[in-house]
Image (cartoon, rainbow, N blue to C red; front, top):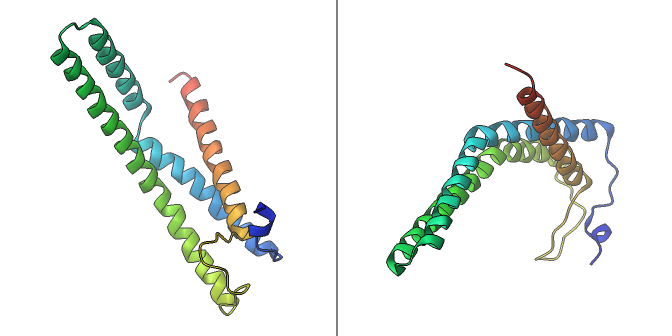
Length: 156
């Protein structure tokens, strides 16, 4: 199935486009700020150092129980790191998701709830607003990352 077949062929008004761009850019910027606050780079560096430590311990050990102890510690650290990052992504995505659902609901109400027709179950139906939202949210996150990196390069 082609992507073009999944995209709703409706015209988008300029006001809808600007609202989508604003929500996407602001949401993407906010996503990055929240995610970076909940999962700072220092935690990733600490995880990397601890992982190397455990791997060296595994390689240098001759006792199987000691190897499994390092392996267990490595898996626990990996689980904590992955869980923390997953939680950070979910929390950071919440404001953008809520803003989009509220806006999309208002747009659908303004159009009297008219939809493009019944869609078959099990299909994904994307509107041009949703595609633009993803594009602008990505741009907003990249802009926030760029400003974050610029701030790191400047002397304090």
